[in-house]
Length: 57
Length: 200
Ligand SMILES: [Zn+2]
Image (cartoon, rainbow over all chains, first blue to last red; front, side):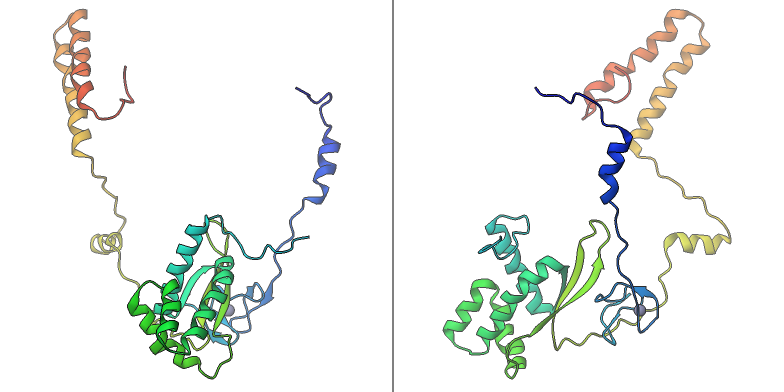
């Protein structure tokens, strides 16, 4: 079976991970309760969406 | 290129997937609104809309076409008599999908599929119901230690084990000390259902 000849250095490992960073989800302000919420989603705090209450919170 | 590969499999076999859609359509028609995942809602939406469109023209053929997806006859009746008439003037677009964000547990994007004329009524929230622990706390006026109930079976076993070596300790002698302790073990062995964790 083929095996690695050399162990990868930390630099090589870290360079591989240079593009693995996660981005935080986009946030917008809820027009009803002014809490931050994800855009195009029902507000998890007050349950409003498009000016109407959509869910119980 | 991804051509001619529309639709999601939803990690189910064809039969499983179709059965699930069938169940979800039944729920949607009965409850007017269902909560599911975004992927399932997106797959279900065209199916639901087609059923409504078919049901706008009542007749034996239309009833049977709807009944293919909804095996429950009372639900089929409801689709034709309570739901489809509401949408006679609407050229499609009977449902909407609301995104709810990642759900706890598997972080799947949750969504609500509902009819566009669904009228949401917020539940009036009464005072929080007092739990048993709260009630005990109020009655005693302070912290209450939760009392753990021992299983009667485990308790009996434990006391039998404790009791057995005690008399031997009083009577001196090395031989007697080990004997009573060793004896109960083989007796209990066969009575236990699973493999014993302690001893042997
Ligand atoms: Zn809000």
